[in-house]
Image 1 (cartoon, one colour):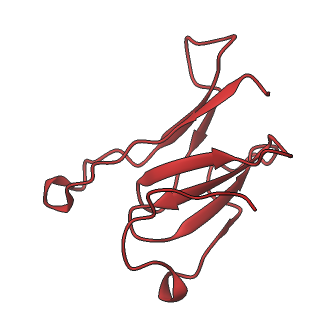
Image 2 (cartoon, rainbow, N blue to C red):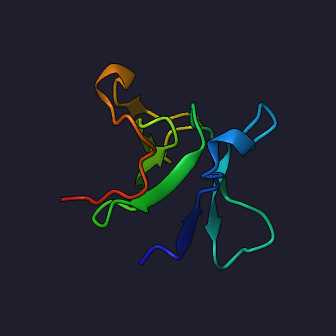
Length: 100
């Protein structure tokens, strides 16, 4: 409904991931497709991203290290506003998530 697409990038082969593996993911406005509107910088590559269906300024992302991050694109920071504590997070990559 917002005309925006969130795009995550991650390699699912742990052995192929190195320090040069891109960590950034992007939000694109489909009406202005020449460059991303917003860059997300997670602590680990994002395996999945999902907009909040009620508040299109909020996104949740599942990371390769098992952490779930939360972004508010109204904030100027490209880093997550909040993340799950890694000690209590998933032990495997988060491949999908849903808002309830």
